[in-house]
Image 1 (cartoon, rainbow, N blue to C red):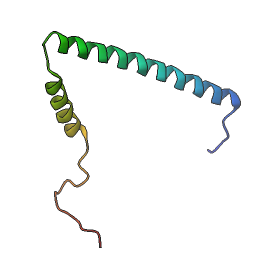
Image 2 (cartoon, rainbow, N blue to C red):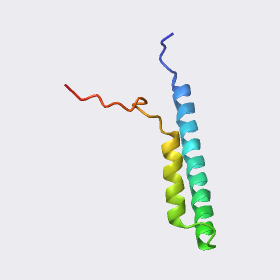
Image 3 (cartoon, rainbow, N blue to C red):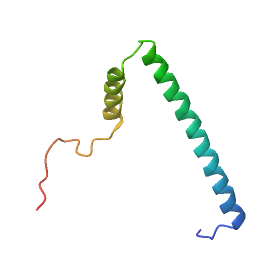
Image 4 (tube, rainbow, N blue to C red):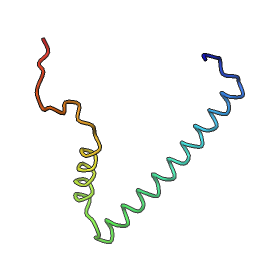
Length: 74
């Protein structure tokens, strides 16, 4: 069913988006602070954090070509 959202629904969606942005900001601030404390205390290094981030990103990023074969563009 395709219908046009009401002005109230649009305002509600805008409010929810603003709440998400604020929540994201606060979570990012806490995470950045925690990382900096761990580095300052010598528990981890920035290099270790960068390496682990790359490992996790690679593990969670879907492989666009799971067979490993290369398909040249004709």
